[in-house]
Length: 336
Image (cartoon, rainbow, N blue to C red; front, top):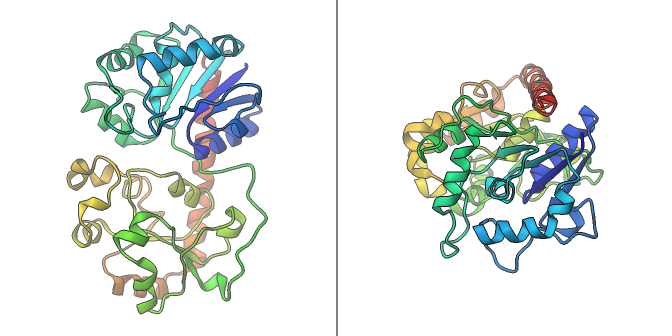
């Protein structure tokens, strides 16, 4: 079976490349950067404005006309990250297998002046239930919840979560003193702008490194990770799971009391009542993370955790997640 993967997200591309390698599938890529495209002769899926995520009727028609001969070479097409990419095929009567992997709200739009999302797009997505050649895959429980609140029922659809893995683990290493006793701090908005997490940790004499890591082989050499979640699900979360990283994060109570809701990237209006839908706080993942109720509590837990025992639990958890995910994709891709 010949596969084509369309995505605007490098994490999705790395993830599915890893899956195809492990399952022995050949898969080509069409993306927003020419360098990511398998066929370098083709133009990338890129517009000259900041709204290339917004697949209007006209844009879907344009992409179809440019690539239709190329598309028809494949038996199955997968769209990931932003589901509107699927409109290229939904709108133009694609009759082969189509997998829509929702990773960031099915109607994700950038900006407000493009006319997207529009009524026709919602009708196309809603009609998927009547088309046997198309599967919608949510990558987290929250996507099912969000679809329901937009009048789309995908509650019977199987969730396939990210692996967060890549075929290139990286060889470059960050050289710092006492790296194996230092906690890695991501450089996202919550750890740098909403609060200066590194500065807080310094006051509590917790060694930390707040910069970019140089790849997974670099990341795994740190003692652990301290982070403040900002979204229902992130690729980084599953990187940590698959790499068996020790992760400390605020408990639900501390998260919602200490921080205002501006820190949550999307759909924060659902947060207070539905935090359990976040992969950071779900029942499935709660035994993976170490939650702290205050900065003092964090200090205590860092100093008292049995790291060897916890890492063994993480190893089993991560291995199960990887195998389950590979089995899910194998079943999905083999289902004609």
